[in-house]
Length: 137
Ligand code: AMP
Image (tube, rainbow, N blue to C red; front, side, top):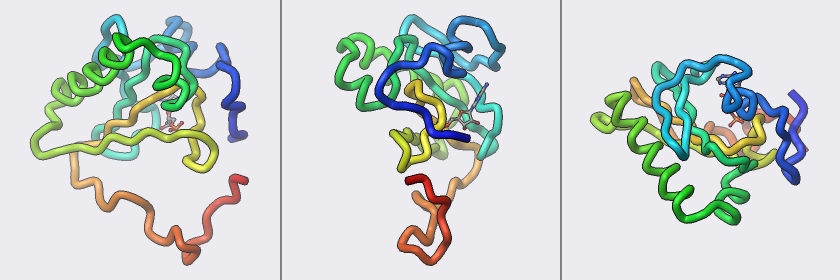
């Protein structure tokens, strides 16, 4: 998949379409600030994405431009979603990709919530070069 342009918000990105109701999603939680829905290609027994309702490309864009109410509301929605999914005990992982080096594919901020099993070590082993990584430069 080609990497998006992270400089200007793209209204045609897939999460913008979900927010406009143009394509379906399996909603877990929704409020004024956020929408949480199941990832279409789950990488764990529970894999849910939480997105802000505003047009923010990434975490950098969001923390620079969103209001305090949007930021507080969004992170409260992340916590609320994990609770709805019954994840706080025994635990879960949050992950946010930012930009090409992280392999962010959708240019609308999203927090991944992974749970439902022991999700393993933090990063893929072999980053030092022992495992061939795709060239994303
Ligand atoms: P990232 O690589 O951090 O940008 O993650 C994008 C995520 O969006 C991936 O885990 C995809 O499986 C997920 N995704 C893409 N399209 C959809 C969709 N229509 N509904 C739910 N999840 C999606």
